Length: 426
Image (tube, rainbow, N blue to C red):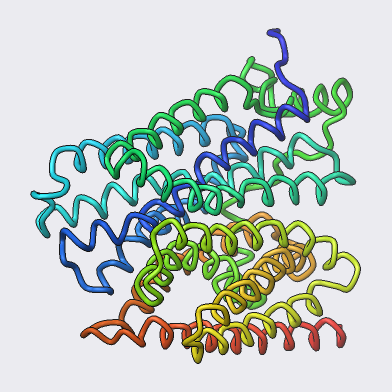
């Protein structure tokens, strides 16, 4: 029998690094959309589609890759997703190097979308890391380690939204993408070096049978959590429970909205208020980083006050903030509105995953797959809809587009109230 590698702390650190590296693609086109739009002369709907392209693969691939973790551990799925992201980033670099700025025409647009989708594969590492970290740690540490994993990993879009504008000012667009490619390759290598599967999966890889691997991992190494049943059955079971889809709707608003705004805000600040790309990047980073940090605190608040009550408060804040953004023509007021959006969405993100095991206890894995995957799909759907409000030169549409979040927050608030009433009567 071979030597077991790694330990829980390294397992958690490795997964967090992998997710951080992959999740940075959320801000892929957001900061650079203005420069691409200027040379391609595309309308706001197509801009919205472009900046949301990474969220397409980053959301939908969460479901099958989460299932894959239960059979092989997280290491192989992580490396596949990060590898696909590297292919997409390398493709973007060579396309921009070859065609930007003079030859970047509408004929290249579908290729940019395809490469953006490939880059977004790294975003799907979220669900892989959830499984990988969970198998390393005992039940009584799950909340803390998963909160740190999600909170630190979610910082990536905000940090990159902050760095990219400065990089473009000093390096230019093409060289900035090259630097990002190098960072992605180095980060993937770091994950390869320290990211490890939990003891059970390593024992299976070394040829030990399933039951023997469970016994050895439990008795020798103290592992508590193991894959249970068939993930396909879990997905089917959870899909038949209406509360699963209620939670999908909540996460569509909170986390899908978070991804959408991280991509949309650079365009909003630079075009609607005429701010420089650096200022737009800083303001986007403030929103994204704050929402990520609040998610960690939101988990603790949910433990104290309950997931439903926390969600109700969070979506009320989100709705109020969206109303402010809809009516605001003031730069300062819009900054305040974006901060309240971060508070509401970050708290709601934590509350939703507090509710998953409570509302769907018989199929937690499957429910988490649906919620995490289809909820994050909002990051792909929302930006083009917001872009539609700006079409035909309607400059005020950058503010009017926030009606999308008013509606989504009202629906989510109603669902959260319904879940609270149902929980009280059961």
